[in-house]
Each structure stands twice: as structure tokens, then as C-alpha cells.
Length: 268
Ligand SMILES: [Zn+2]
Ligand SMILES: [Zn+2]
Image (cartoon, rainbow, N blue to C red; front, side, top):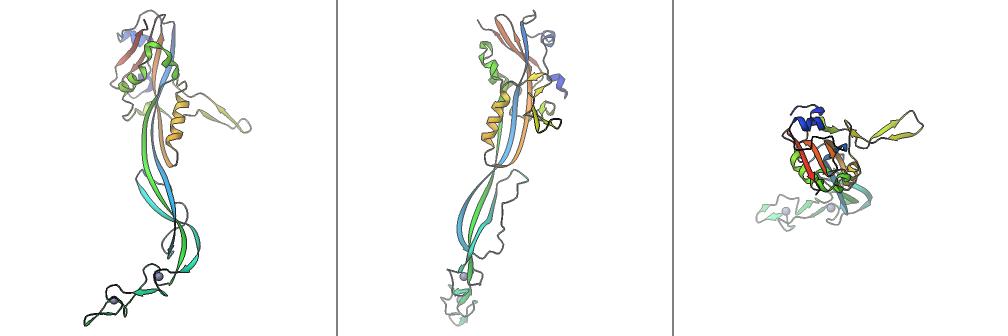
């Protein structure tokens, strides 16, 4: 397989010269279409809150940073400071030592505490703590691989199973060839020439159209990306040629191993 997009673009002439089992007369109609393959990785963030009394030292405020990788991470942040209260675990910053039972002695020896008391670990000896609303965050990575077929081929009897067949033939779960990458799924073009204008164009891949596969992919990504704070989304085209004859239909495309394949046949 070469690494030029051209090698993935099937033609009727190519199908004949590579000896595929398609009629040699010209088809009534040819449509250049493409399957849309989406590989996406996200980090989803979930959180919950709890009110606690703590010394504030060491707990940062604000949202945790956007993760730089796709790993599981936990964060705790102060969401709100609700004022100072007496520490509920001590008296004025110290509490009885559990080792010596508050006596300061272990038999004939002195306990390592301070005369039967220890500095309160909850308030770190301050005797007061801050009532805090803490928020706990969990960042969880997730990934998806999906292939989307233009719906119009789903209505063609000979091509009913094209989607699953092509998915297998192109190995859409595997790393995709970089030459098939589509960098702009939405087809948005900045409209600097028009006041506030954004022109929507149908994205295509070297003349091959995605049909409604784009809308399906965007809907799938919207659901998958809910709650995500980091995204890595890659979209790829896998072009195919739909040959429509009087009583037969074929889809011609390159497989992952580089052979040209014709799928379909007579609908009778
Ligand atoms: Zn002690
Ligand atoms: Zn305390």
C-alpha cells in the first residue's frame, strides 16, 4: 500500500483492469462515497462534594487543570470556605494520648507524648478548623472506534451488508492511514469576507462524499464526549465507488491489505 490518497480512490476503469467481477458495460450511475471512521479518546471528569472540618493547609482552590494525558487521576479541591469552627476532635489543639491513656507514663518510662497529650492531627494544633466544602474529582479516560456509512447505501438491496463487510475489510479499529485523515469534520469555513458569516460546506474526501455519516458521527461524538475535559478526535475517510446497474449494485474499494474489492451483485 502506498501512502498517497490516490491509491485509495477506486475507479470503474481500475475495477476492470484489476479483473474484478463487475459487468464490463458502463454502469447507469456512479457515486463516489466514503465511509467515515472516527477514533476518539477522551478524559471524562466526574465529581462529588462533602462538607468537612479541616486545617486548610495544602488543599488548593479551583478546578483541577485539564489533564495532559489519558490516565486515571484523582483530585481534591476546596469549593467553598464556610468559616472557622472549634475543632471537634480536641480541646484547644491537643487531645489525650491513646498510647499511655493520657497518663504520660508507660510503666516506669515516660511516654513519647507531651505529658499525656498529643497535638491534634485534625486541626494541626490550631484548636480551630475551617469548615470547608470539598469537591473530589475523578478523571477517567475512555476511547471509541466507530465507522459510519452514508445511509443511502442501506436502502440498496445488494449492499445491505456492505457496512459490516467494509468494516471488516478495512480494519477500522486499527490505526488508520494518515493520508485518509479528515481534519475538518464540520466543514466550517471562517467567513471573514462576510460580516459574522460562517459558510457551511459539505466536507468531502477527494470528491468522495460522506452523506449523512457526518451527522451520525457528530451525534455519536456528542454522546461519547459528555463530561469530557480532554479530547483527541481523529476522523478518516475510507472512499468507495458505488456502481449502479439496471439490476445490480456494487461497491468498489481497497481493503486494508491493498486489494481492490467489489462487493455486491444482482438484487434478484
Ligand atoms: Zn502518651
Ligand atoms: Zn483539633
